[in-house]
Length: 391
Ligand SMILES: [Zn+2]
Ligand SMILES: [Zn+2]
Image (cartoon, rainbow, N blue to C red; front, side, top):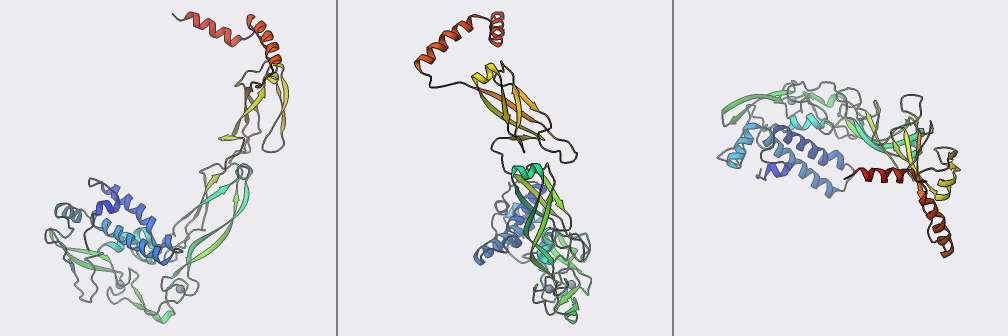
C-alpha cells in the first residue's frame, strides 16, 4: 500500500502516545464506519469506505511498535526495503494473512463486530463467544414542560437485529454451513511473519471464516450472510418528571443485537431540553427576572407571577429595591428521584419611566430634590459613609 502520512491520516502528532493513537483511531473509525453510511448515496459510501480503510491501515502500522519504528525511521512500515509484501502463509492455500491488512481483522472486530458479523473479540479472547450487542445513543428533544412534568414519547430509530430468515446463522439453510477447512473449525490459525527481529510466530483469528470455524456456502438472501439485519424500530419512552438537559435514560435491551446469541445492547437517550422563554433552570429551581415600575417599587403591589401551571399572586412590599429576590416555595421542578419540588426565584428589576412630559419632569424634579435632602436612601447613605473612610 502506498505510504500516506499515517500520522496525519489519524490526525495525531508524531510524538503521540499509544493511547492517543488508539483514541484518535476509535473516533475516526466510528465516524467513517460503514454502518453510519447505511442510508447514504453510493458515492458517499465509497468515499467513506476508502477513508475507513485508510484509517484502519494507518492504525495497523502506528499501533504496532515495530511497524511504527520502521515507519518513523524509513518512511515505510516494511523497513529499509519498503513496499514488499511480508505475508508468509504456512498453509499455502492462497489466503494471505499478512501484508496489506495483517492484524486488521482483530482491531476491526474488537470495535465493530456489528459490521464483520461479530465473530471475534480482541486477540486474546475466544471467537464465537457470546457478547452483548452495542448500545445505541439517541438524542431526544424535549420541551421545557415535558422535562419538568415528564412525558410519554415515541422514538423511531434503526438498529441491528438478528436476521429472522436465517435466525442469525447467515446461511441459506442448515446444509450450507460447513466446517472451515483452513482452521479446521478452530477459528484461529498460526501465522509466521518476517519482522525486523526475525521470524515471529503468532496466532490470530482465521481470516477465512473470520473466527467462527464455519464457512457458509450459500448465504441467506436477506442478510447476505451476516446473520444480522438493520431494522427500523419504534419504542415508547416514559420520561420521568424532572429530567434536565444532558441527562441520559437507558432502555435496556433496545440496542443492537448481541453477538453469538448474547443479549442486546441498550438504547441510551440523551435529553436536550428547549429553553423556556421566561425561566432559567438551575437544578430544580426556576429563576427569572421580573420588571416592576418605580411606582410598584415605592408603594408596593400585588403582582401575578407565572409558574409552570397556574400563575400565583405575590406581594411586593412598599420600598422594594431593585435586585430583591423573592422565593415561591415548592413552585419549581419536581425532583427526579424524590417527591420534592424546587422553588421559583423571582428577582425584581425596577424599571424607570421614560418619555416624561416637561411638566411631569418638573414636578418629579421638585419632589425628588426634596427627597434627596433627607436620608431616605439608606444604601446611598451607607455608601457615602464608606467613601469617607477611604483616604
Ligand atoms: Zn439471514
Ligand atoms: Zn477458519
